[in-house]
Image (cartoon, rainbow, N blue to C red; front, side, top):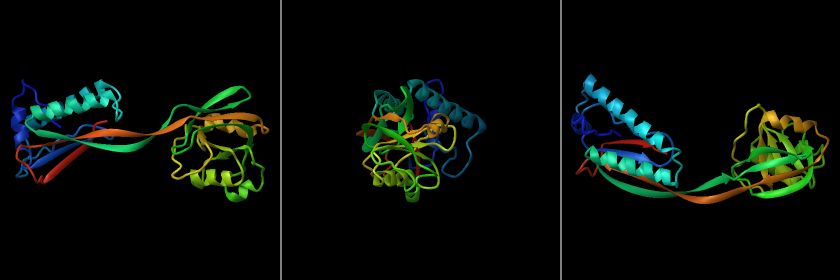
Amino acid sequence: MNKLSNSRPSLQQIAKLLVAGVSVLSIGVTGCTPVLEERTERGTLLSQAESTITSESAIADVQALVKLGSRVTGTPVMEQARAYLIEQYTRAGYETRTQTFTYPKFEDLGSNITVNGRTINGRALNGSIAGKQSARLVAVPNVGQTSDFAAVDVKGAIALIRRGEIPFLQKAQNAAKAGAVGVVIVNNEPGDLYGTLGGEVQIPVLALSGKVGNSLFESQQPQVSLAINTRQRTVTGTNVIAHLPGVTQPRVVVGAHYD
């Protein structure tokens, strides 16, 4: 998306040089503003000066959006970004319309495990149910295969499992089948662990970084408290669609995220 400046009237001409029938789509789902193709309908490259102006304009748009703050879909800041795009498209000679959409969003509102009075913050795996459990913490050998649970008693306990080899969902399902009331999955690297279950399991699942989680495998089944605080809600976002006047069947569509 090119920003039109009153001090740069040539940008209006540049916009008209774009492919006849161009449609520009700003999608309300992640990343950056669209940069229009720098070629004319006949394939002729724009001049160096014109190209520099359009590049500077695109950078100015990105900076303006970033300055607004975090553009999370469904928030007031996202609406400010939408209004900004519509204004800039209109100033550049485009006609605009909006298109709303909805999607389910999983949110972790703060999840942790408390061991010997020490609270360790983690993150619920996407799709985990909310819940609180106080029980023994039992380290499961290897990576949580069905056979691994045969070596330990996790009935009524919280299963501590290492990441690796099998999906998170399979680890959690194996734990649930063995009678566990919760699951803690520790990353096989020092950093934080973010992930998605990708299916249903009826016990809460927490993910920990390897840095803080590895030491728990050395514990001798202490009593711990697991707190998973999550919610699932429906979010409404808005797409901004812009096109040159009179265009009904665009030959080129340029899309980009703006949140």
